[in-house]
Length: 259
Image (tube, rainbow, N blue to C red; front, side, top):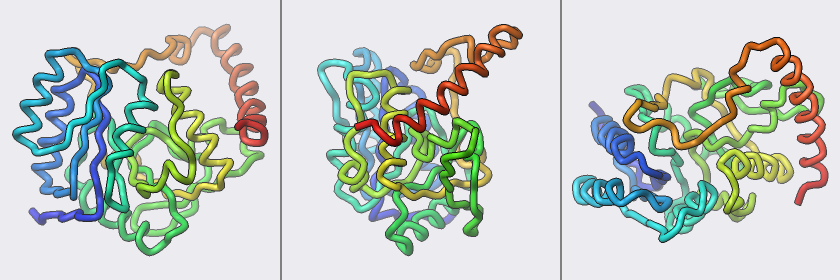
């Protein structure tokens, strides 16, 4: 297997109470021979048993661990980790994602896009759904096109917290993540800023093939989301339609007026 020496990229991993997931991810990157300039693990005040395990992993994998005495939320966790990055590019991944065997070759393509096109801010590798409007640019990637009149509310997430490559100057252009709020609010706020400041990004077309999100029974997701989103009850579905129309109005308002 080819070695991938990524000397101008820092791998930034945010972690919270999922040290076994973190270990799987680190092992996968090592197996794929992805060698980054530095690996930073930013922990959000995990329980002692997880911190002890991470410190053991630190000896094995040689990453840089940054902790905090109190839980500050995902926004704070990303901010403090990104502050330590010294390379031009950052690969951001939360701890529950594992790279697939085909990730390295496509990551190299993404990095080349970033180097050749200085106007690019982000390249996304994973999503639950395809971005609504995509313009193919080659090598399996497409440019995300924001159209205000599009009725798909997913259009707001040109930026997403899912695995992505970005310029390490990202916070200078788009501002710091909101702290002390839920992960969803932090992500939405950054997505709005990305659109307001005319961010530009690419999206990998086969968006579920480069990373696998693993939430097992031992370490389930640490983010709680409302059950009504998955309900098939007719009344709930009708209310959801009303809510989605409200969201479209709110998105338009936030892009124009939110500070």
